[in-house]
Image (cartoon, rainbow, N blue to C red; front, side, top):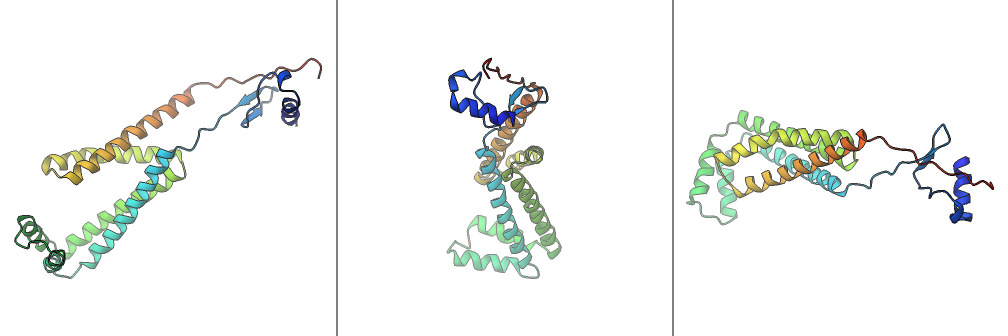
Length: 204
């Protein structure tokens, strides 16, 4: 009630007011007015969350695609795909893929599909939490992204591809940004907030 009266005074005569009352102001038990400015929605965190959700959808589709290959001749399926895409079947890369695919057993395909679905679940958890702006999601994504970086760097060293480099750089950028966001929030929590006192008008 007191806060409403103070805001009414501010509207009637702004020059006589001791301070400008913000939308997030509130009164403490001792009658002092404190302002708590809520940070704006972090669009970059939401964008990262949306990207994680898109990756989850991609991994789910890939997982079902791998399951569909169970009990099929993978080399034959790959050869038909190469022919449909009008690639040269005698190409060295195509031959390597055909040789590798011939070694994939149903048990190995099940392991691959399980790993893909696991990635999808993790991305879905990260993405949902970041889109909803949950603090735990920032720490969860930071820890997971940082834990995968050494493995991704090892994969680049073992076999360099443009896709691996781009993916690692994106994850590194996400890791650095999340580390910065978390560090800023920790520092903000450690700084005590000083209440803003409202000067009472002697004539009121």
